[in-house]
Image (cartoon, rainbow, N blue to C red; front, side, top):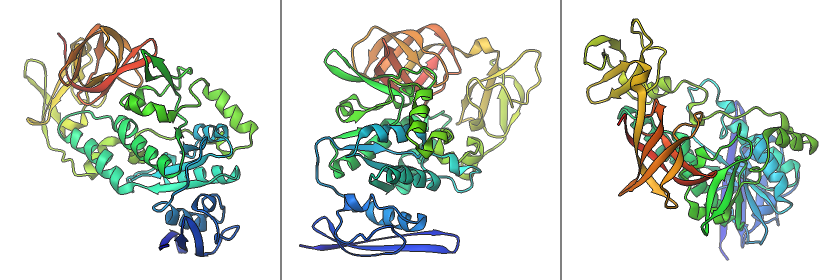
Length: 421
C-alpha cells in the first residue's frame, strides 16, 4: 500500500510550526508534529483532526490534513460548516457526537482594516477549530483562497467595472460555498451537511424548497436564494426554527466561547473596508465624467461612474432645490444620471435565473434589507419577468431576486434589466 506524505506549516511573526505526516491506508504511520496534546501515530485522519494543541501547531496540522482528508462513510455523521461564530457553534452542538466541523479559509483583502470580523479570517478559523476541539470533535480547514478569489471576488470586480451592482454573497452562498462544502461532506463520509443559517427546508408539490427562518430579524433565506433545490436533500438548517436570542442562550448554557462572539461582516473579502476603496485597489479605474439630469443637462462632475448605485442620495455633490438620487449609470459613457426619488420607481424587472415551481404571482424580494413586494410572474427563456404591484426603488442590474410563495422560495436569479413600465 502506498505511503502518502502530507506537510503543513503556520507562522505568526517570528514563530513557526511545521507538521509532516506519513499516511498509509487512511492511518498516520509516522508524524513529526510538536506542540500537540497527543501523538498522531496510529490515528485515522478523522481522529487526528480532533487532536488539539498550541495554536501554531494545530494550524500546521490543519494545513497538512486539509488537502488529503478522507474518512469512511458512517450513517448519521454530519458535516457542519463552521464560521467561528455562535450560530455554527450551536449547529455543531446539535449535530451530535459523530459531527465533523469544516471551515473554508477564503481570500481577504490584506489592505482591509478589519479582517478579524470576517467569517473566513485566520482568527475565525482558529475560533471554529477551538469550538470543535472543546467538544472533542474533529475540525478540518480547507484553504480555498485562490479559487474563491477567481470565482467570487473577480466577478464582483468585473461586474462593477461593467456598471452593475453584483451581490457577491449571493454568488458565494448560492453556488461556490455549498459546492465546496458538499464535496467535503462526501470526503468526510457524512451523508448530511448542516450550516448555522437561519433558513428552513419545506416540501412543496413533491419538491424540497428553501424557505424563510422563523426569526424575521435573522432570516437568511434571501442570501441563499440561488442555491439549487436539488441539493437540499443533503443540507440541513438546524437553526431555522429558532431566534437568535435562543441560540445565544443555548451556546451560553453549553459553555461555548462563541456565545459572546460578535456577528461576522457581510462581503467578508472586503475585510471591513468600503467597496469603492477596495475596487480601486483591484484596478477599477476612476475617471472624471458628467452627472446628468434626465434631460441630459450636466449638473456636475463625478470621479467614476461605478462609485454610484441606483438609489444613492449621499455623496452626489450636486446642488439642487430638491433631493436628488442616482438613477442609473452607464459604464460605456462614464455618466451618472440623477433625478427625484419618484424617478427611481421600478415596476418591471427582468431576471436571469429559474422558477422552481410554476407560479402566476409571488412576493419578490429584491434587496436583503427591503420587504418583499407582490408581483405577477411570467416565465421567460432564461428566467422570469416581474410586474410589481407596488413600486420598488433603487433596483440595480446584478442584484439577487428571490420569489416567495407562503414563505418558500419558488424562483430566484439576478436582475438583468429594470424599468418603470
